Length: 488
Ligand SMILES: Cc1cc2nc3c(=O)[nH]c(=O)nc-3n(C[C@H](O)[C@H](O)[C@H](O)COP(=O)(O)OP(=O)(O)OC[C@H]3O[C@@H](n4cnc5c(N)ncnc54)[C@H](O)[C@@H]3O)c2cc1C
Ligand code: SF4
Image 1 (tube, rainbow, N blue to C red):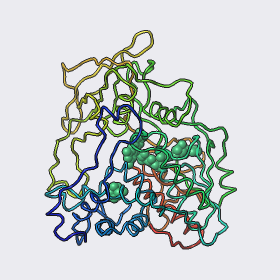
Image 2 (image 1 turned 45 degrees about the vertical axis):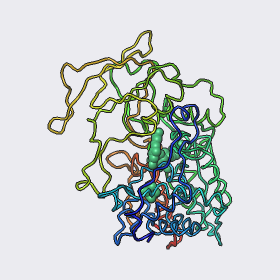
Image 3 (image 1 turned 30 degrees about the vertical axis):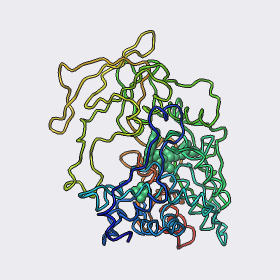
Image 4 (image 1 turned 90 degrees about the vertical axis):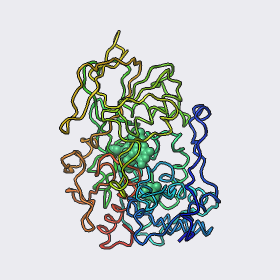
């Protein structure tokens, strides 16, 4: 266990950030990870609790006390072996996971939690640098063919597990590059995209085939979802050609705001805006890019996607950026005895907020105001919680100047037409209906069709998508072979 007295001797060390004025000039990552000595000190703080709540707080159940101890002892090679035993892609989670493990850390009850995410980040970056991350092709092939639809973290984790189990895996992706929201959505300044390319190379060497620009099924007319497809395959073709199909198409249907003026120019979904910048960063020449340069930007939605719009707008050179959140401002500090070891509700200030943003809470949008067909302002009212409902506060109506409005209010469900084309039953929220049971989990009502990730659980996190991809891979393997040695 790290150092027995480590938690009393050492403080938590935060990863460093480039100062805002510098990082705003570019779209690259700006987090300065821990060096080996700092990571070792962090590892020493771990108490190796009898019941490691962190391990349970982590959706993929990373074996955190073990890798903390190994890093403390300088045994980085075994640390990455432990980390990879539960997580296919620690370089993604080590950068962009909100770290529910740290909320659950026992030290977090009356001290600062162990910097688990920063240790994870340090282990995987060192492992790649040392050349320890290599392809793991299967020892024997099964002759079974699996199609994975969607190349986000769920599809990638599943594909890697299934290929390592010996199956021939083909990943179908409608976009021009692999990665799902990791590629198109999450800004490069949070996670650079060569990290995905490096994993794709590893997976190709393990036998995974990637087919980009191929849409499985169809999208509804006028859909604004990112789609670079040039070819289409039908669900019937996939089911005829493959022994199993795993749907990992994400939850791409954005929540709209149908208030008066919604049709005005200059109002876009976040997922129209953010992928364009990812593409420009990748060197693509776009015919037209939604630009925030010199504009008064209003971002509607107080979550991660909204925060990513704030960071991207500031890098464009916006004149001002204001972010609306309909819920009241949460407390700065959680009530730990009440919330630990769960994820607490508290005010979270992201690095993008620190770069410049006016944040408005308890505010609802009544209408968009425009001139000559273009948005010029957002009409709002403040709201308060009464009897569990948000009600308008009379006399608080206001207008915010806006030349660009970005709608970042989350995602309601997967695209229904894709599930409908397969005949997959949906749950009450419109997600693919499938359980996570040990037996029969991830199977839909359609024979040999499975579903995982945001497409099954609804809008969520990268770490949950990895979990679902891994567990679904085991379910598919069991379905194909009658048994599986893949971990859940
Ligand atoms: C802007 C933004 C920022 C986020 N930031 C974070 C963060 O910092 N940390 C975090 O943990 N989570 C974050 N999330 C959430 C996280 O990205 C998702 O929960 C996660 O990517 C879901 O993984 P997935 O594999 O289920 O689906 P996705 O990543 O959505 O991938 C689905 C893929 O399937 C493809 N696809 C869909 N339908 C078809 C079809 N019919 N044919 C072919 N291909 C198809 C899509 O093109 C897409 O590439 C963010 C989400 C957004 C939108
Ligand atoms: S994946 Fe996320 S929750 Fe799990 S250990 Fe890493 S940072 Fe913590």
